[in-house]
Every structure is written in C-alpha cells, then in structure tokens.
Image (cartoon, rainbow, N blue to C red; front, side, top):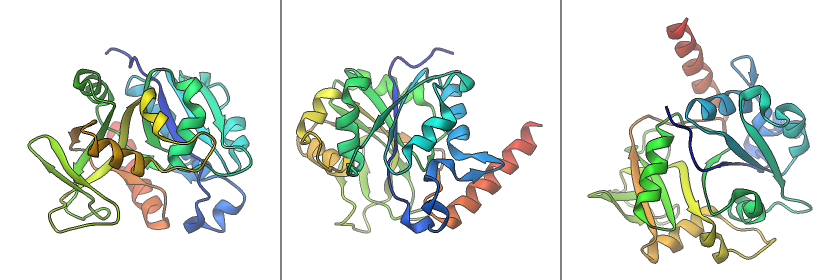
Length: 240
C-alpha cells in the first residue's frame, strides 16, 4: 500500500488536568497503555496507515516525549518536534508554530486520541477537494462523546462545540487535514484553537468533510484509558 504524501502533526501539548496526579510528572502521551507509553501505539498505528513523517507539537513536559520517541526510527518514521515555548499555545497556536516543519499541507490528530481509520482515503479526499481544510466526522449519536456536527449529503452543515442541538448526530472525529495557508488566520505565537479555525473555514466554504465508520478511543479520561486498554488487549488476542 502507498505511503501518505503528507506529514502528520500530533497535538500533544496540553496539561491533561483531568488525569492528575498521573500527569503531574509525565505528559499524557507517555501514560502507559497496554504495557507501554501511548505514543508508541500511536506512532506504530500511523506507520501502518502509511505515514512516513510526523511532527509532534509538544508543550508541558514535551522533552520527555522527545526523549522517548527520538527521531522516530524505532517506529519506521521520521519524527520532528515543535515546542510551544514559554506559554501553551493551544491546538491552533501549536500548529501555527509548527508550520515551517509541516510544509504546504498536512494531516493532524490529537495526542490523546486513537483514530485507526483509512488515512490514505482521507488524504486523497482532502487533496481532491481543493479546499483549505477537511474534517473527518463520525456518526456518534452522542454515544462516545457529545455530538457537535450536523452532516448532510456529504457536507458539514453546522459545527459547534458550544451551540449544540439534537440535530447533531455526528462528531468531529479528530483527524483533520489543512493547507498551510489556512494557518494564516491564526496570530503567530499566540494561543489559538483548532476548533475555532475549523468554524471560520466552514463559514468561508473551505471545510471539506469525510465520514469515517471506525469508532474513536481517547485517553483524556480514566474511563477512556480503561476502554482503550480493553480494546487493545482484545485486538492483540485476536491477532495472536
């Protein structure tokens, strides 16, 4: 299968306050999941999905992630790092800071999310769309988190994490794609939110969509960690 042509940014800069006291001394990406740090699972999954280059956008205790993952060669990847610096930049600000490493276009995922879907199909859909960004969506029915997208006829009609309605049956899955020029809408070296950027691009008619059908897992909560542990244990048993 062909490799991805775009690099993948991983947003791993948050404080993970919901996981204290565990995350007082290690970043969320290094939380042990099924016997090893979560980032190890994530990097291997990305390589399996065709990724060759990863840019880790790190913040709190980010040097510990770099010490573990190194240059990525142990995972068959080339891994580079972009650090927030003195203040946390949020998801949008971190991407703006990492822009010199990301090139003209890139995929992006969150550092606490397990998103094992068809990245090649997402990349192809994004490049064919001609739009500045693409959001993957999942028909969630409010089951795994609060739905925040109205998705109809292959298009995002509404996206909001604050103004929610019963018509929202889909959720922002967490895998996106962006052209570098979209980041010009964010102030340099200032905190910014990727969700706000997506909302603005949707208003401009510049946000494509791709529906995925594999559920997501997350390690942003202790219950999410338990769910992913169970899933990885189950799938490891199926593959052995």
